[in-house]
Amino acid sequence: MHTSLAAQLAQLELGYLHIERIGSAAASELPDPDAVDQTLGAIWSELFALFPDTALEDDAEELAWGIVNLFHRAATKRGGQIDRATDEIRCLLASADGSEIHTTELETQIARARAAEVAMLGLESFREAAAALYMSETGSSWRPAGGSRLNHSANLTSAVVDGREFLRARSESRRTAAMPQGTAVVFAGGRLSFASGEDATTYASNVWATLDKVREHVADMVLVHGGDGRGADRLAASWAERRKVAQIAFGLDSRLGPRAGFKRNEQMLSLKPRYVVAFAGNGVLERLVIQAKEQGVAVVDRRGSLGTHPKGEARRIAAAA
Image (tube, rainbow, N blue to C red):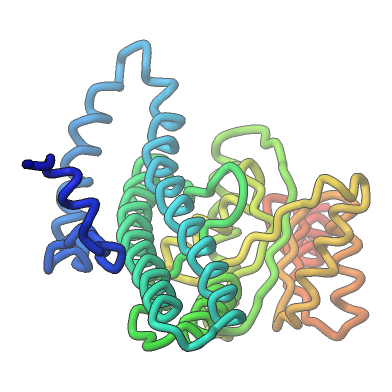
């Protein structure tokens, strides 16, 4: 009596078999960086050439931001996959029993984490290329709506050989991405209005010139600022991106209410900065300057008109009188 194929297979001891998708040999390769820059540049140029003198012209900057954010969100999603795999690795290490099944599962989770990390790095490279185009288009540094724009490209951990090394490397990668190596310089400035476009240009030029001067004294400078997308912080972030200077943005914790700005001051000063560069702002900024001086941090004071030194401005007024 013939049995069905299903029945015949059911009689076999196949429990030890595990069918996996076989990846290609090039699965760990990333696109060529030059090709990424050229391709995105061509797409960007063609797309934004459509907007001038049309009803969409005012929407161009928002659309440009969204394109960069597309890659940022994809990279963040891959980062979440790494976190989940890392949690699995941690649990597997805690329950290690030396069995073949356990070892295989650990190797599988490490492989998944590695694959997700390579993909994340690739997506971050796309985001950075698009962010450079955004800056050329708008003159401003691209910042995500929430969270941080971390860059893990210098911290690839694919060379790990076991779970414990993976966890250590992952922790170091996060620490280094969140806190670049170098000497902190805090920048602070508020949102200002100007009487003319010429005044606004002068103020922006003074921000950049001041930061250039500071950098002459701090070669390994890491710029620390509040990440405000509509104030002086935006000018400072754009300067850092143009000058290839690492930067850290400390956002406000809305849960702290009116105290959020003062808490941010404490966080920034806890980095023990070499300088605090202060442009005109509100009372929270004035408190930052006072605290910096109390802690012996040198203050580069540019709280005068249009980003000038206050005493220099006073002397000019006195001379004119």
